[in-house]
Image 1 (cartoon, rainbow, N blue to C red):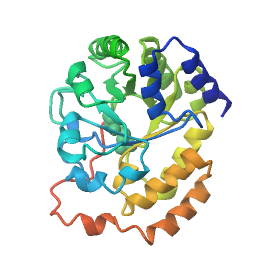
Image 2: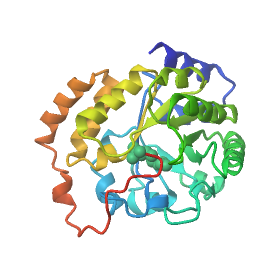
Image 3: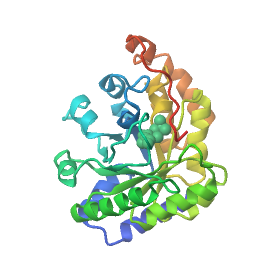
Image 4: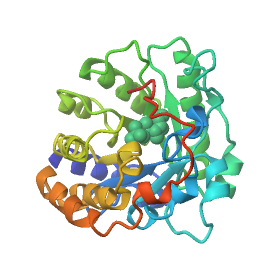
Length: 299
Ligand code: R5P
């Protein structure tokens, strides 16, 4: 608790413009310094990921409970109602695919003018520290921060971890610190043992990815462990919308993030809520499955 309050205080005391502070406050709530971001950007390199085949169908029932939505411009334009008042975290890096040469070979795919036109509250970009294209992705981040600073739009750096790399505190604290040094306003990473070391070395708020689908109680434990070890929140995707009860799941994650519920309390809520979760994926997804339950290379 102490750690991230200090971070938010540092952020507000900085020389940030009003616009930058205002947008950041939409992503990380100033009342509690916490954040529940719903990630639906997986298609940018995975294509139609299981249970995100029809994005609108997965997104709509979850929107009322998300603090923000992380997605690409294509899914924003086609699958989200423009009257929606949920802040958008626009993924602006990519141009690679799961069957291509190297996932780390990302470039910036969306201009700052386009991000402004789409009323993005934050820009998201992946960095691949230690990969073949490390330099290229870090240079992308530095450039994006320059652009974001010019127009008052914060940047979320996503620390993507190659399959061959150990996802441990030693690696993640390096990747997160590098992201913060290059000017990222928020960093997304993975929860790991000794996570507090990752938090300690990163002077901006850290949020965690959910990773591959886990049984609901385990996913809630992951979220709770991350929060209690200093994460400002979650940027969770598959563990919410791949659940058979996605609304019950997001409400339970929300209880951990914003209501200080522990994992068991949140799971109790999940069991109650799933009875009334009309968004049950089994019902809604009557499409013939052509996708498999992909594991992402970063899992
Ligand atoms: C990864 O590059 C994507 O940005 C995902 O949004 C991210 O991994 C979070 O989703 P999940 O909780 O499914 O891991």
